Length: 436
Image 1 (tube, rainbow, N blue to C red):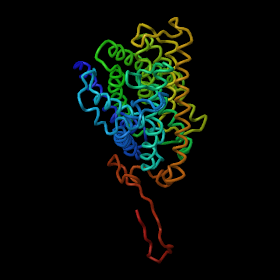
Image 2 (cartoon, rainbow, N blue to C red; image 1 turned 60 degrees about the vertical axis):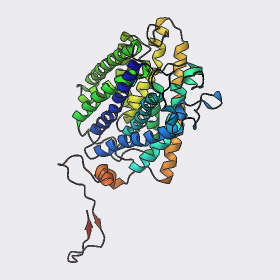
Image 3 (cartoon, rainbow, N blue to C red; image 1 turned 45 degrees about the vertical axis):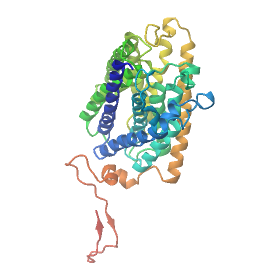
Image 4 (cartoon, rainbow, N blue to C red; image 1 turned 120 degrees about the vertical axis):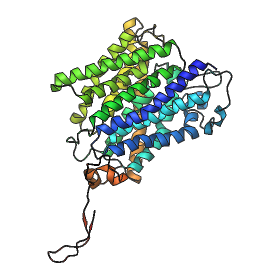
């Protein structure tokens, strides 16, 4: 057991857990003042339900021995309950239970990311059912494809081993997966009633605070994926920092040129874009390559975000434009910017590596896009036809926080009132009955 690496992954796991309130604040601040609590609840609710599923079946599906050696899905019964992981393994560098909880948080965060696209209009119960179904049918299998590497006793996933694509910390399994799933659900759920004239962000300081907390946690997300305390983790942290700075600057430049001013919302979105794009590539590029990758993502993603108004899909908090597009940019640009000097040890096109790696990265991205989109469409459609996905129109109009959770985030807000007249009212009847 490597105590130094164990200490680093313990620290990284704690940092990734801090991404949960970071995401809740980031998303919550971007919604209207009457929807912030629902947004926070969707984030924490997803973590709770996926965390339970991970112990029961998720870890086995993601990291169990692949059925038939095909690299599609891990053995669902191999680690049920995770009791077999608690005994100390003298051959392991870090405790197996530590790896299990570190990866559990990846699953939780990925599912929670989808919720941002659905703000203001999805039933909370329907969201919880969706989160469970999506984790079981989409995230766990895709995590097996991408994160499960072959060992002496276990056959892992096809993207990691047969295809040989580079995805250091989840550009495909996390960001492309969640981003395209968000698009699929939005298409089934429909637009908000006031789209595109939607409520302004209710609390921009919370957005910036959430982005800062996410940036901190991302050091654990990416750096911990090295699974050791050493040079690889150090390179990953530097690349993560560089790409984030470059993307933030690029996004603000795009805003200034396009709109005449840079905004706090744009700066926060640019930072998240850089973090998304560097996630798959943080072990594949040089520090200068990380700057270039972040700069490209910071230009492409704000332009992608604006497409929702032209194409008419209501991605409330820009999950598609930031996570799907940012994940694609970070995954595919590895084929151009990868350097053999970086921890992953492969050269891309710009470093004399030819087109092979570019093709590999493109296939990985397309495979996750196609699978996640189709299966998510089916899940969303089934929930819509059974329990229903969307809140009633009056609930959406009055604000979802009080209607669903009977709470308001801010004391200065008046409680929304929905009037129902039970009897016809005449001028002198005196029998008006009103429920508020």
